[in-house]
Length: 181
Length: 314
Image 1 (cartoon, each protein chain N blue to C red):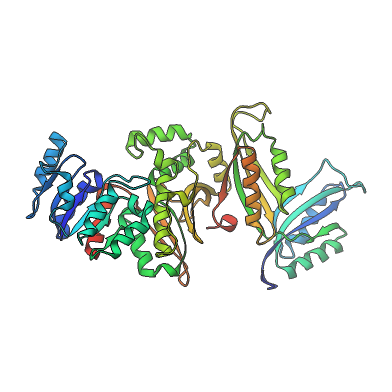
Image 2 (image 1 turned 180 degrees about the horizontal axis):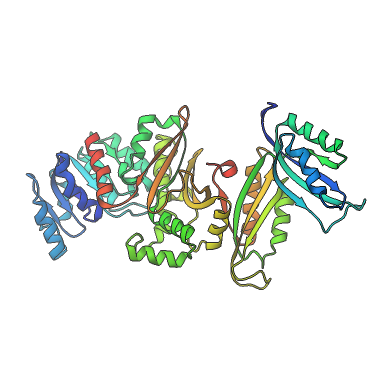
């Protein structure tokens, strides 16, 4: 791994927002205006933190230097940062799974992958032509995007293969690390 | 050069037809039942007419064609697995009598590479097999020119039938069975497309590339390859890939002494995502980055052109 400070990395920031209009936008502004590239926002509107606020998880890319500026700007804007950069995800992996995803319990599939590795599922798209009834006999597919630490992609893919084999699912893996070939 | 062409399928017949254009004379031409042999050059048109009318190329014995008067044996019989017979036997006879061999048949170099090389060492003849990987594309000769030691990885799409099916499924949102039937109607897929869609054909080419890269080190056969085909791949998998700017291709990968064939996610506009029956090979080199070679990976005249290029290299 390079120690260079101008290398762009991926970070996950957990924030707590007060439940009022515009709060999310106010939280994103310090990220964008300090050179962060927003990758995804997970806004759990239905959940509340113990302090009665709404938890938000933001994935972004920035250089380590800019990332410090972003966290500082969030604090200055009065936004509650619960966790910032503790886990440094720098590789994204996308795989497609096909088969009896629903019948074999997709959420269990995802949890097993996350539990066995240090990867986090950042995006999941399901295509089930015949609906998502648990008893559906028709095969379906899911595209799963995971964030993981650098140099851990092979271990994550190996785990996905194991879990998929267990459930007789077909895995379409990316070509090369990160699938950028 | 005087050529003995063994095998009268699309490739063998194209070699016979085109040989004169390249300055060569066909002195023997055989299918599995019959042969035409003439030390002064066979009557090519007569052989084609006989094949068309009676299903034989001439009145001679096919075994005599392999023994007969020639400088180069062109082995273009169908690829067989395991002992690679009868192709391997033809190679053996030619080399034992100190003649050259040019292969279009993958069997001998995919399944018995070490045996072929051992026969070649004891012979005054040489063996070339450019046509076995990527049809008309100069894949093996480029690897040889670069020096196998300078190549760190080879990745490619080496089966036009599988690529046609995947690219049609991706572009039209059609199901596997539907596109396969369409490919059979168009003549892109054979009546029995098993070896194309189950990855066997691509894996044989991967094994040949691995043999060339290891340069007499480890020997690779089909059994050493990790192979997954594209049969019954879900249309929904291609749809999801497309939503994310990707597509699915049957990729052959030879890296670090491993041969792997399987459907993989590749960026939609990447070199490794050709459309239709087109083939591509990407060489990763030690000092010169990636090198892409693309073109027609199958077909009679296309593959024959690679055979005749090999004859020219002898």
